[in-house]
Length: 138
Image (tube, rainbow, N blue to C red):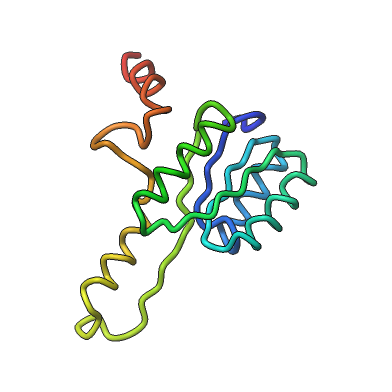
């Protein structure tokens, strides 16, 4: 897939795999929407992405909060008009024995892996709906 001028939302973009993904996409000319909890780190990564040729938008986001993730999708769409790729690289860790971990901690851990906003089966957000219908009819 060519990434030049594609809009790529990346959760967990402040470090690790998310940061590496953001920098790689920016090098290929993507418009990257960076999401993580740390605004300071996101701003640093955004600057690095722009130095590599991409346009960047930093959106502080808590992927365990559905409202925050919906706001992320709205910010991406408001700035770039659409979302082409959504990459979930955010991670939440739980330390301790599984049988002694409170259920709320397990839920938070699994929530981060399915954080794209959704209205049920189908595309992850309203801005993707038209393209999903078009591609499913071919």
